[in-house]
Amino acid sequence: MSTHLVLVVDDDVSVRRVMKMQLEEAGYQVLLAANAEEGTSLLNERRPKLVITDLRMPGMGGLELLRYVREQHVDTTVIVITAFGTVESAVEAIKVGAYDYVTKPIDYEALVLIVHRALERQNLIEEVRTLRTALDEKYGFESIIGRAKPLLRVLERASRVAQHSSTVLISGETGTGKELLARAIHQNSPRRHKPFVTINCGAIPKDLIEAELFGFTRGAFTGAVVAKAGRIETADGGTLFLDEIGELPLEMQVKLLRLLQQREVEKIGATAPISVNVRVIAATNRNLQAMTEDGAFRQDLYYRLAVVPLELPPLRERKGDIPELIQHLFRVLKERHGLPLLTLDAAVTSRLCAYRWPGNVRELENVIERMIVLCSGHQITVNDLPDEMVPSPIRADTFLTDLPEGGISLDAIERELILRALDRFKGNQTQAAQYLDISRRTLIYRMEKHDLRREVEVE
Image (cartoon, rainbow, N blue to C red):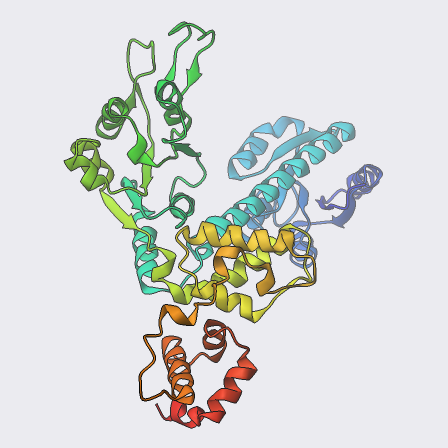
């Protein structure tokens, strides 16, 4: 049964009474007002989902009440009631913003159906608004975690270019978040309510990529029993994201150049091109400038794509962002796998921060998910780390030279090793202890033994 609140505003007491009975039987909660002034008071106090108002009432009329609702309660739907001979007034109300109208004498069965449809429509609008809010949160620039200066510079430029339709070329190593940045640009642009269509140029066989991008007409080739729109046409009005653009065959590069120059495409088998309105964002992990010099990528296409170049920095150049990324990914992934009570040992975070991450954020996400899935306890520890992140202790004979004839001080060597480890990790005792393959407690004991704590603090 519905719990929607409906406000009925009518100066006729019998109409109010019958309408209340009919709507309550249909499952709605009903508020009654004898005039528009009383209606505005109830609107402000109770904020009903829907208002049904007579157009002709003493004092403030229904049209004036409708305008008030449009200005002060934009999420409230309005249905107007009018006499049979004054339908023109109802048409004017529709122009002002009413959802629909009913004429007197009222067909209450028809009215309940209109109310039902109006509230269904409003529910859909609210669901779309919620979805758009979720998309903003997921694909807004704020969703790209990090405060490193190289990343912030890229995000600042991306935020500015999002408001325009300029072609963007995003470069960066695999796993740096090129598609996420492209989606954020689209989501923050005037095209955000239109499609965001993505195609991986390296994942489609060469003999199929033309049909996939540009589409084809019926009978264009054997098997083309029906016409098909290409990805470019599907993206009309929105954004086309061409991932791994460096993998696009040379013959397709010519056709893509025509799209960028003339804003039109020609389907396979078509006799004339069609106009399209798309914004192109391309991404690559390859050096396109070097490819143009080698003849593997068209220079004219490169310059058309790189109107606004954006280069995402690798994770190793934004080390300070890794702890925040770890916490964010750990929180999201453990909730996705239904493990909200799982915790992460601080020693694991230290090991993850020390790793070089050749696969960047994508590799970090994969490693965290793997540890979450395979962890058998309530806390992820260093024992859950992948083998490549567990450093093998270096044998002493790999760095010790021949022993001197006059003897050597073991304490002096130990003291020097501890000092160098602390220096390597900027005084971080946890990381220095891991590097020396001892516990932090043992490190502190040996630091005190060699009177290093005071020396390190002074330095």
